[in-house]
Amino acid sequence: MSKVDIRDLRDWLNDVEKLGEVTRVTKEVDPHLEMGALTYLNGKNSEQTTLLFEKPKGHKGDVKVLFNPIGNSMNRLSLAMRTPPGKSPIELVQFIKEKFDEKIKPVSVDPKDAPIFENVWMGDDIDMTYFPTPTHWARDGGPYIGTADVIITQDPDSGRVNLGTYRQMIEGKDRVGYYASPGKDTLLDREKWWAKGKPCPVVSVYGVDPLLFICAATGFPKQESEYDAAGGIQGSPIETVPGKITGLPIPARAELVIEGYSYPDGGQEEGPFGEFTGYYGRPGQEQTPSIDIKAVYFRNQPIMTAALMADHPSCEQNLFLAVMRGARVWRDLEACGIPGVQGVWSVPSAAGGFGMTVVSLKQMYAGHAQQAAAIAAQCAGGAYFAKFIYVVDEDVDPSDLEQVIWAASTRCRVSEDIDILRNTWSTYLDPSKNPNEERPYGSKALIYACKEFKNIKNFSRRTALTTEQYEQAVNRWEELGMPGKAPTLKVFDNLEEEFRA
Image (cartoon, rainbow, N blue to C red; front, side):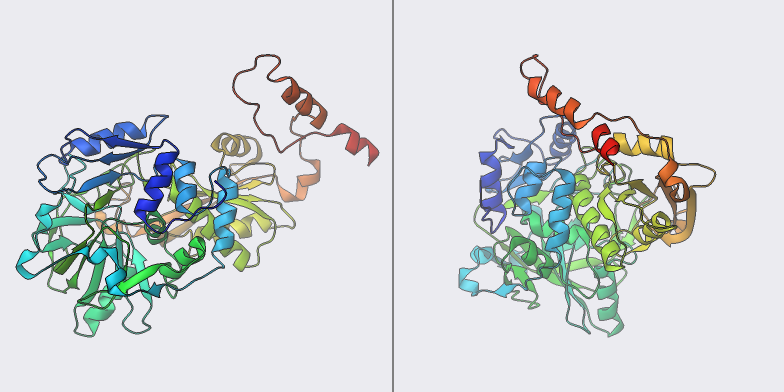
């Protein structure tokens, strides 16, 4: 596959199916808890695929539910990023980092050419209970349609259009919850509209191209639109169409969309909800703003997208956030003038990819590692929730947790190489902070799992194969009946080069 030409969820799904990574579940499955259970167990499977539930129990129409589109598959993630499979994790991070410089604004198409308007419900026709919305966990407050979703809002002052992803519980035929964590762009947009005495216009997409979902979940600088970033990654404009109610730009090839307004009326009780941390969010039900739905749009035979929030590796966001946050932090480090960055990785198993960031750095001067760690901890791409920032040397692959732990155990002087930042940006979803009121405030550990710079030239030499040893072993691998393929190495101990020097 030399060229990836994908315009929407259906194109992506067709390409993924060619790779053998789609399981079509053709027997009846209950959206209430059963889909979530199967998705959770599938995530623990080393051969996990994306699950397309074709016959939701109790649903009389022709609506399918696609759970965990990306999962833990580098193949599926690469296709979502419009690049052929085959890149290593850090190669994909670097690819995306460079794509961040290529911003392409969306293009508006004729509504007659927009598949999303194949079916239009307004007024009394609106009925969100028609759709087979999953209840993921036994203690969830209700069915959640907003998991693999995109919420679209606009800054009333600048006109910037924002794409984010937030949980949304079905509250009635024409109303869904609208939870947003403090500091998130949609919440800031919403409050600006309310401060002007106006309701906040909102669009929510529930059957979405994985690229848009990934960009919405990642977050970009508050003055930038995720539409532009997605267009840059795709290499062509995202096709949009103006909403019939709010005029907000809707993905023209989306599967299922609602459009309406959010009012500062105190909202309704919402939650709890099983979150990306592997815990339920804020205990009990909370008053949360809602979206009053004025229109529903959907394609013929729509595919709803759903993302299970869970512990690793069953959490949908873990892998793609590892790549996207890694690319964002790497880009932010370079923007701040930090040289020598070899790679950045947000560890997938660390609470949905949020909890731990690893920076691989070629140290060049005193304080270089400390500078990189502080910026990685507080930059726009990496500040939210992250608790542990590791800096490792250039001979350590930041995406290989085994190497990172080895470096921390052999290069970090615990009494001297850990700094703490307090009162940093966190989330109400952090179960370690109690009472709940303390949760927006977090802390971060900066861990220097790298060689002490002032003694870097005298640091103990690590054991490594010579190039000759490695090549000889690789060449004889198959002859000797060794299992699998010989691993790729990048660190060698070339004695002959040292001798010549």
